[in-house]
Image 1 (tube, rainbow, N blue to C red):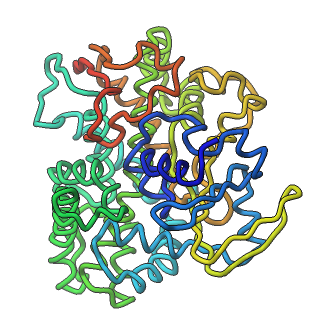
Image 2: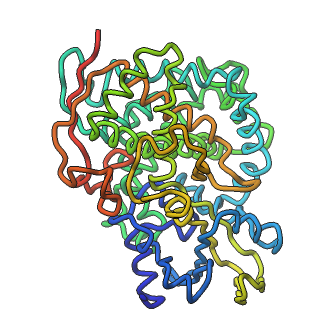
Length: 461
């Protein structure tokens, strides 16, 4: 088994979100498998379900069992989300002192999002209908203003990233939001991992990431500027009730305009970076399996309730199980000693605790042949559902919206276009080789395009 320094090196290379669980949203690991999370079974036999190491001099504990993070949080009373959240906010916004902003996010903005994005709040919020409308607009003008009146070739990652970005921006902020900022967002997405590392201060290495981040913050500041200086007396055309309430709360909490823009940007990133990679993986597997592609296309085109077909539901659940997902993270604010499964542990103050659900999602006792993507795995079976959105009271507040967006993107894409795979520069059968399909461009330009798929897109009439 690798030494602690070796494990730390693997974590560094793989982009595990050991600092705050967020870098993983942007940078997928080079070769995705459980053993590259440094939680291999032989290591667990020796050290138990909590694997501790160091990353860039910081203590990291990787939790590998479902509900264990929630249990530790409830019993130890020293695991908090504020530290990781503050690091994420600083990384995304560039705001150096984000203590106050983090407090407002946790005390005001997240409860607002929880109410608006709950099952009872989503339908009247208009977000679902607006997302569908945004997809239609995105499909009309793809990246580079491509006209899909005839068959066009485009990378699947670019098609997914642009469409999800456009539709999410439209549903959150209305038609006035400048969707051309997708280019800056893509650059930030592909380089954001640099902003979480010690080399972020090396200008030659991280200059693109810093420039893209500054551009996105300026975009959001300009977007709210007129409303802000008018003290919110005039509504922003088409803005969602969720974002309107966030802006109003920003005023009430006396945040600066930069901090208010940062709130919007962080919430927007949370939405886009959850949905985009899942949508990519789902579409990649559908398009590479001709039989599934034909069956799902027939289901979505023939049923009035095209978001509720059983095959679509099964594919989405299998994607949530199989694909890389955000890692819930806490930080220990004080030393804690405890026993677990006959072993004694100590979490030192400052330790980042990361919950790695891949051990659960790839448990062969729960899911036979877990490394294989099986589109029909959840079709007519009473299997336990995957848990990609965390657990406990800090479970992702936008999970219902995210599942809807993934379904909507897949269904509306198949209803609007005839798609055909032009080629793949990696494996021919992604459904049979999970370990070799890691670093695809899950969020636009991820730098490594070896796993991306070129597709031909032609609009249906």
